[in-house]
Image 1 (tube, one colour):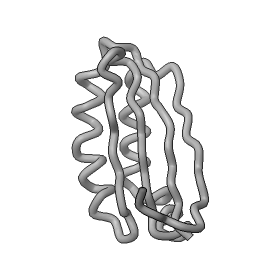
Image 2 (cartoon, one colour; image 1 turned 90 degrees about the vertical axis):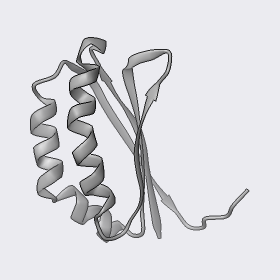
Image 3 (cartoon, one colour; image 1 turned 120 degrees about the horizontal axis):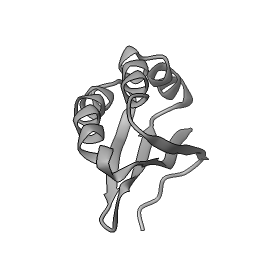
Image 4 (cartoon, one colour; image 1 turned 180 degrees about the horizontal axis):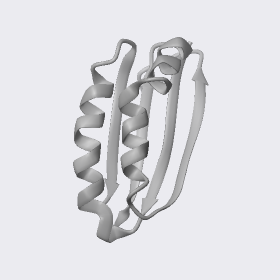
Length: 100
């Protein structure tokens, strides 16, 4: 079963540049993980304080390994220094992946 995780981080727009400095190495480390199919942060062009997340994992086990990774813990610890007003993620368990 493939997992898709989607969500958003809402931050004070003045913290945007600092958030992107933190995100770049974190995203690179996550993409290198076994079972990571896709991992991306997307910026809302109309709102620098809204960062969308999209993750795709080959299995629940590979996502569990990511959740226990040191770079995820480091990222969350560093984000605590920013003015984050909301962090919301939703997990989808996908039974089939069919191109449109």
